[in-house]
Image (cartoon, rainbow, N blue to C red; front, side):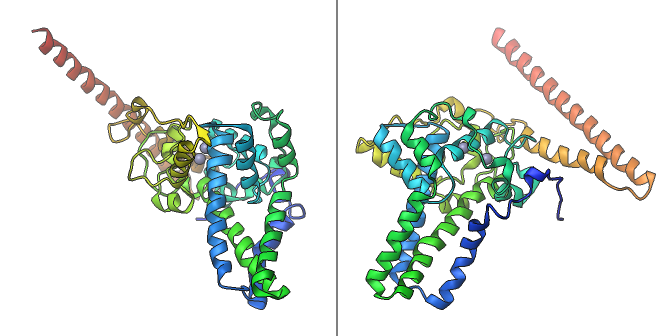
Length: 357
Ligand SMILES: [Zn+2]
Ligand SMILES: [Zn+2]
């Protein structure tokens, strides 16, 4: 069912300012006319996709947003530079907004709360005025670094240079300007569009589809497909459970390409102190071991109570029926929680008595 949300004027899409974003989406259509220049444009597309997935995931996300490992100033700049070529706005803008997401995940303040619908959490949130500016108060650790501030401000420069390089590479290979244009559209722009939506999917679908291992206070999920497409970001429930960890796949079978690359970098001395999830964290708040999944409970309960206050009921009986259902569910939940508590206490006493005798 389509859901509509009340948007303030500041939250409506700013079509004029976001025009380049929409034009880029139409660019691949031009390849019908230009062609792809040369088959190797498709190789460039895949390489640029995964290379920049790494810079966004390993740089923008795991380093600048979460400080989950350390590196020197030159390396830090290079990671930021690589991420900026993906046209996902400035590194400090990105990291500050992401910190805000973790601080308020799934609450009304959350910048891309999945509760406001797929489109909002996927991309509408950054296409509106209210989220255009960098939240400097959330990024005090980097806000005085001149080279990062420069990159943050001139966010279009690195991507434009890379696109130009791909264009001339296309000219060198195809020998025609039309071929160069096609090469650039496929190699650079199609790769950029796919990278955008891969990244946005972590904010939208990784809060909707997948399984939950930890009872976090949000609706984050673990999803293998998203992890494969985003260099390990699909282990989003793990990540919300323990954001400080450099690795997001907590077990060997949870594929996390970004972590493997960072591990190789650490062996080469390029980065250091990759933070791991401690054993006590891996065993905490496990749903399998009975932790109450309050994140999902809140999300579902909120939806049900919201329906009660916003739905148009045809008859008073209909409204009464829903009210009664919610009240009886509430009472049952209280009852079950009380019973579980009593049972646990009883077993504990039994054990203590056995140990004492
Ligand atoms: Zn995060
Ligand atoms: Zn999230």
